[in-house]
Each structure stands twice: as C-alpha cells, then as structure tokens.
Length: 164
Image (cartoon, rainbow, N blue to C red; front, side):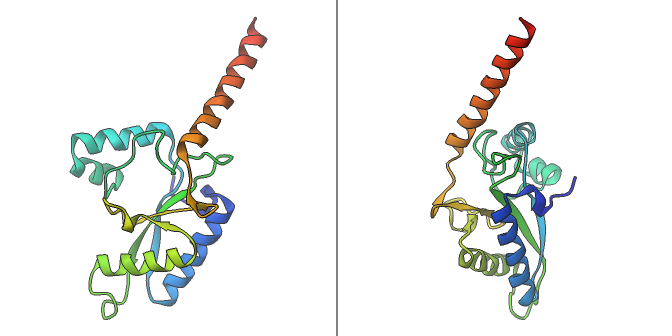
C-alpha cells in the first residue's frame, strides 16, 4: 500500500500538503515515501538494518538507521494515524540545487517554517524525515506507547470477562 496523507494526523496531513505546495512553487517535486508503520514492519526494517544497511535500503528504502519497534513516531498512535512522514525529493531545478543534499536542506527549511521538526538536524541526519510537534516539543513516543498498551490491557480484560 502506498503512503498517503490520510495516514497522518489531520494537522500533519495539512502541513505535508502545504510543504508539497511550497516545494512545488520552487520546482521541487516531493514523493511521500513513508507514513504509518506497524510494529511488525518497523521491527523488520530495524532488524534488516542491523544485519546490513544495504539490505534495509534495498528492501525497505531505509536511508538512515531506523528506530526499534515501539520507538518511532511513524507508529499510528493517534486513532490509527502517524505523527511522522518521510518525503523524498524526486526532481528539482539543478541550477538552484546542485545535489540531493542541497534540495533536502531547502525542503527541511520549508518544513521548519511550517513548524515541523526536520530529521536533517539530528546527530545522525535523516533528511527525508519530518514530525509533528506537540506544544512546540517532539512527540513523546513512550507516553503514546503506554496508552496503546493500556488499551490492549483493557481489551484483554473484556475478552477474559466474556470468555469466563
């Protein structure tokens, strides 16, 4: 299944669409390459990267070290929606941007202007990664993960009651 803005939180989907519009106005074509990922896919990506970064790149399109399952903002923690996306520039005016890093940096600047967190500023840069900020801060995955586990615990309790 191809990634779509509908797999993002509503606010992040709007920001992606605005980022795509702003980039397009500068001649940059973006491709949405990743949105919501389940725990299984994240674990497979992480394990593939641990075995061989080349394998992870070839099989999953991984360009930098992925987070372990349960630690990524790509998990659909918000009513089945993700708080992060990856978008790759696929074409751009070469007279303005001489290489892929230059165009990625411009897209990162545009994203930051929209209030998004850009992975290109990290110690291990991930120049195609963008995240929704919550109250001006990076979304806390551990709290969201705990909420999801609490939901599963409640569901397990309901199932136990119905089968008892």
